[in-house]
Image (cartoon, rainbow, N blue to C red; front, side, top):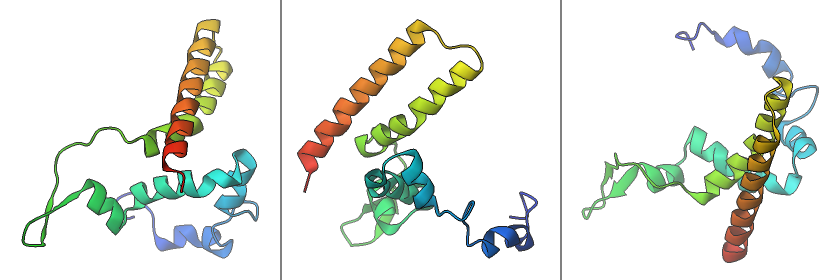
Length: 133
Protein backbone atom coordinates (compact mmCIF):
# COMPACT_ATOMS: atom_id res chain seq x y z
CA UNK A 1 0.00 0.00 0.00
CA UNK A 2 2.82 2.38 0.76
CA UNK A 3 4.14 1.95 -2.78
CA UNK A 4 0.80 3.27 -4.06
CA UNK A 5 0.72 6.02 -1.42
CA UNK A 6 -2.07 4.50 0.68
CA UNK A 7 -2.35 3.85 4.39
CA UNK A 8 -4.93 1.84 6.34
CA UNK A 9 -6.57 5.15 7.31
CA UNK A 10 -7.41 5.76 3.65
CA UNK A 11 -10.00 2.99 3.80
CA UNK A 12 -11.82 4.22 6.93
CA UNK A 13 -14.96 5.27 5.05
CA UNK A 14 -15.18 1.97 3.15
CA UNK A 15 -14.73 -0.01 6.37
CA UNK A 16 -17.41 2.04 8.14
CA UNK A 17 -19.77 1.29 5.25
CA UNK A 18 -18.79 -2.38 5.37
CA UNK A 19 -17.41 -2.02 1.80
CA UNK A 20 -20.86 -1.22 0.44
CA UNK A 21 -21.71 1.36 -2.20
CA UNK A 22 -24.91 3.27 -1.49
CA UNK A 23 -25.70 0.56 1.07
CA UNK A 24 -25.46 -2.21 -1.53
CA UNK A 25 -23.16 -5.22 -1.53
CA UNK A 26 -21.27 -6.13 -4.68
CA UNK A 27 -23.74 -8.99 -5.14
CA UNK A 28 -26.66 -6.51 -5.02
CA UNK A 29 -24.99 -4.29 -7.63
CA UNK A 30 -24.08 -7.25 -9.82
CA UNK A 31 -27.69 -8.51 -9.65
CA UNK A 32 -29.01 -5.15 -10.84
CA UNK A 33 -26.61 -4.94 -13.78
CA UNK A 34 -26.52 -8.59 -14.83
CA UNK A 35 -28.45 -11.62 -13.59
CA UNK A 36 -28.07 -12.88 -10.04
CA UNK A 37 -27.82 -16.47 -11.29
CA UNK A 38 -24.55 -15.59 -13.07
CA UNK A 39 -22.85 -14.34 -9.91
CA UNK A 40 -21.33 -17.59 -8.67
CA UNK A 41 -20.29 -18.90 -12.06
CA UNK A 42 -18.73 -15.69 -13.26
CA UNK A 43 -17.76 -13.38 -10.44
CA UNK A 44 -16.79 -16.24 -8.17
CA UNK A 45 -14.53 -17.86 -10.75
CA UNK A 46 -12.99 -14.59 -11.86
CA UNK A 47 -12.46 -13.50 -8.27
CA UNK A 48 -10.61 -16.72 -7.54
CA UNK A 49 -8.27 -16.14 -10.45
CA UNK A 50 -7.56 -12.59 -9.28
CA UNK A 51 -7.19 -13.22 -5.56
CA UNK A 52 -5.85 -16.74 -5.86
CA UNK A 53 -6.63 -19.93 -4.02
CA UNK A 54 -5.13 -23.36 -3.63
CA UNK A 55 -7.28 -24.66 -6.50
CA UNK A 56 -6.22 -21.79 -8.72
CA UNK A 57 -2.57 -22.44 -7.87
CA UNK A 58 -2.98 -26.15 -8.61
CA UNK A 59 -4.72 -25.48 -11.93
CA UNK A 60 -2.44 -22.79 -13.27
CA UNK A 61 0.77 -22.30 -11.30
CA UNK A 62 2.01 -25.58 -9.89
CA UNK A 63 2.81 -29.07 -11.05
CA UNK A 64 2.86 -32.06 -8.72
CA UNK A 65 6.11 -33.99 -8.68
CA UNK A 66 6.43 -37.76 -8.27
CA UNK A 67 7.68 -37.28 -4.69
CA UNK A 68 4.41 -35.41 -3.82
CA UNK A 69 6.11 -32.00 -3.71
CA UNK A 70 5.25 -29.17 -6.07
CA UNK A 71 7.21 -27.14 -8.56
CA UNK A 72 6.25 -24.00 -10.43
CA UNK A 73 4.67 -24.36 -13.82
CA UNK A 74 6.14 -21.43 -15.77
CA UNK A 75 4.46 -22.12 -19.11
CA UNK A 76 1.39 -20.40 -20.47
CA UNK A 77 -1.92 -22.20 -20.72
CA UNK A 78 -4.40 -22.08 -23.56
CA UNK A 79 -7.44 -19.87 -23.07
CA UNK A 80 -10.05 -21.42 -20.79
CA UNK A 81 -13.67 -21.03 -21.85
CA UNK A 82 -14.70 -20.68 -18.19
CA UNK A 83 -12.92 -17.33 -18.14
CA UNK A 84 -13.19 -16.16 -21.73
CA UNK A 85 -16.97 -16.33 -22.19
CA UNK A 86 -17.90 -14.43 -19.00
CA UNK A 87 -15.24 -11.79 -19.66
CA UNK A 88 -16.58 -11.22 -23.18
CA UNK A 89 -20.12 -11.12 -21.85
CA UNK A 90 -19.24 -8.44 -19.29
CA UNK A 91 -16.94 -6.35 -21.50
CA UNK A 92 -18.67 -6.29 -24.88
CA UNK A 93 -21.58 -4.10 -23.78
CA UNK A 94 -19.46 -1.43 -22.04
CA UNK A 95 -17.11 -1.38 -25.05
CA UNK A 96 -20.11 -0.80 -27.32
CA UNK A 97 -21.33 2.02 -25.08
CA UNK A 98 -17.88 3.60 -24.99
CA UNK A 99 -17.65 3.54 -28.80
CA UNK A 100 -21.04 5.23 -28.95
CA UNK A 101 -20.01 7.86 -26.41
CA UNK A 102 -16.88 8.83 -28.32
CA UNK A 103 -18.83 8.80 -31.60
CA UNK A 104 -16.77 5.96 -33.06
CA UNK A 105 -19.58 3.43 -33.43
CA UNK A 106 -20.49 2.29 -36.94
CA UNK A 107 -22.73 -0.28 -38.60
CA UNK A 108 -19.68 -2.47 -39.23
CA UNK A 109 -18.65 -2.37 -35.58
CA UNK A 110 -22.22 -3.09 -34.51
CA UNK A 111 -22.31 -6.15 -36.77
CA UNK A 112 -18.94 -7.31 -35.45
CA UNK A 113 -19.93 -6.91 -31.79
CA UNK A 114 -23.27 -8.65 -32.44
CA UNK A 115 -21.39 -11.54 -34.07
CA UNK A 116 -19.02 -11.77 -31.10
CA UNK A 117 -21.99 -11.80 -28.69
CA UNK A 118 -23.78 -14.50 -30.70
CA UNK A 119 -20.73 -16.77 -30.92
CA UNK A 120 -19.91 -16.19 -27.27
CA UNK A 121 -23.47 -17.07 -26.25
CA UNK A 122 -23.31 -20.28 -28.30
CA UNK A 123 -20.00 -21.24 -26.69
CA UNK A 124 -21.29 -20.45 -23.20
CA UNK A 125 -24.45 -22.51 -23.70
CA UNK A 126 -22.56 -25.44 -25.23
CA UNK A 127 -20.14 -25.49 -22.32
CA UNK A 128 -23.03 -25.20 -19.84
CA UNK A 129 -24.92 -28.08 -21.50
CA UNK A 130 -21.86 -30.30 -21.51
CA UNK A 131 -20.92 -29.76 -17.87
CA UNK A 132 -24.33 -29.17 -16.31
CA UNK A 133 -24.37 -31.15 -13.14
